[in-house]
Length: 246
Image 1: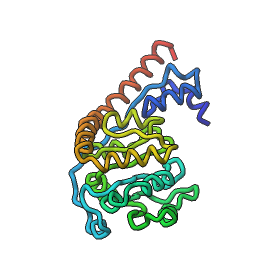
Image 2: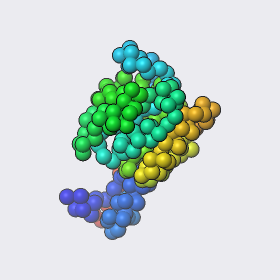
Image 3: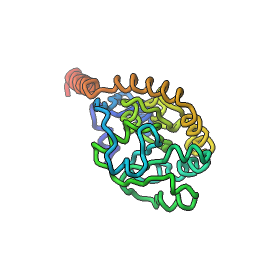
Image 4: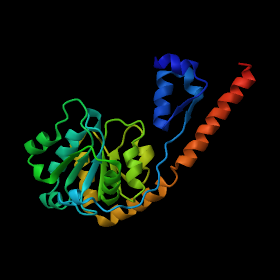
């Protein structure tokens, strides 16, 4: 199991400082051998929205995007409740697009949207292939990811590379990834999520500033940097073994 693996490993590579703290808390004896190797994100061209998505009334810069498997920790129920609190004019201008395969835990996005009276503004796309997903990410007004927990939160980085501002949670690894590229909200507070969304959607200048910050920040997360960091971890582990005579 995991305890045995962590105990016998020479080094433990994790994706974020937050995960490093989690591992150290769970396995105090291993704290000294945990190293952070953040994942990278590849540059990608800005693709136009596929015709089938444009046909759903989506326009460049004109929707809020959620990306992820539909499961409880993604906090979709509160995201929908927050969206329902937005002024009707904002909802009319910015549909909420949910892109992700079905998960578990009774996450019933369409049914919740209907019960909240916002089904007309919500597009539940299901699984979206990579090319179409990149187009969706590149053309979004805002990426919304108010998860209850993420070990890293790769969709944040994937949106930031296109200069898309993010709304995310003030917990776990998400503040560490988003940096100054977005607005942090309390994921347990629907009012906090709604206020963050309204602030972003109501201020194009703010979106542009945060988006520029995100684009610059995402450039630091390259796969080349990740590979170099991983090589350093291997070299350190090998040197430690040699020094210990193992």
